[in-house]
Image (tube, rainbow, N blue to C red; front, side):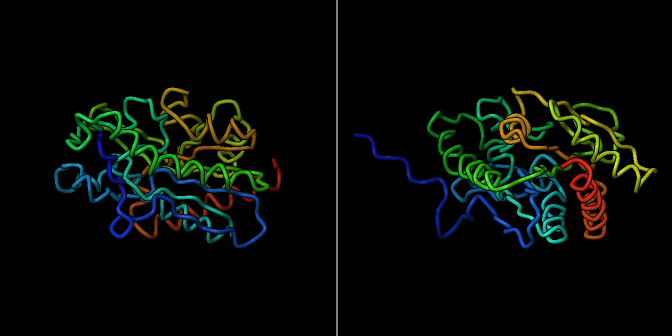
Length: 257
């Protein structure tokens, strides 16, 4: 009889996958940050990554966690952040997506993701992906008027040449009104910025999770916000973008929700 696999996450060595920020005020906004963290379970031995790879955009969304925390502080709203690197498992992908546990990400090899068994994948799903999304589902079930997922993107992909010139993108599918309202509010404050709907990519069921599942699945107003990561690499930039987005959120709550 085969012995059961030991847990992937060691309680005394590895952090819990979910960071909860409780609402401080009676504001019906929930912030979500799927690519907040860079943690790798000790058992995975750093995924065999080259030195510094975890600090690139493939390892996490640079600055996104800091922006999310700053927005939660300023708005007094709840937030749910994911502590593990998107290279361990990407919590904004369906678990069946080819890049949910990538063997290579934008040209960066991930040796620790090669040759995985179904049981290996299931461990990451059960111990990281599922607890995170259960936390989001529970948090969104409280009285909410607006769901926002905070991300950042690289100005240029290694494997797809060409600059991505937008400063902020607001991604949506069925609920275009919320993203357009956020974009308009930011544009009113910062007419110098290049803003867009559904850039630097478009939402679909095969490669996205927050918008189809938590946004459209709940029927609540929602948007996935993508900030170009050169704008949020410093504490000053993170504070600036958080303040700008908070103004936009307040405007949307006053006029749309």
